[in-house]
Length: 192
Image (cartoon, rainbow, N blue to C red; front, side, top):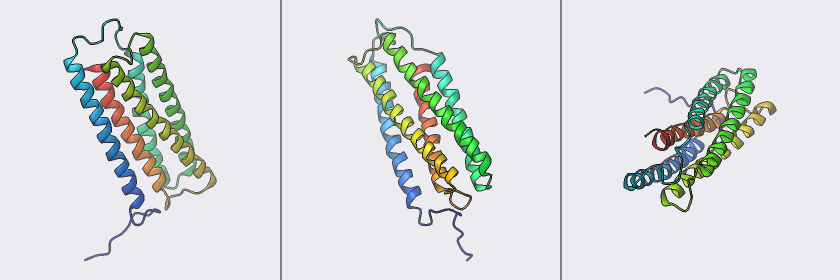
């Protein structure tokens, strides 16, 4: 039997990867439960959108979806850049991901405000759950942006390179998760 080769990174025992994986599983269960509850309440609702509320916006969620896909692709390329030791490209991609993430957060905030102006109320169970879903998701996005900024500072300081890429790959994994969650939110809240 041959030798087992570990990935060339600073996670030799897998604890960091396991911690992030457990966090993502717990977050997926939370989002899944909230989405199922929303689907059940919406199925029992007499009208959707609620009486007195306008139609949900279409352009803002579509723009957010395009940004989520763009962030995912940018971080995928950044992960390849760090493994291939293309640090100049990596800095640019991380900057682009941070800018895209900030625009994504601004679009989400605008969406929230437009829904409040459009008559969606938090005192209604369905409206309250809608705001809860978007709030929890927004908190995750802000955390993801903070982590991207931290990684970019580390790349500029020279802490990350081809043999020390675990932090970037774990933050990228978080953003892949956020993109998948947004797609689920987009389909359930704004399409179906």
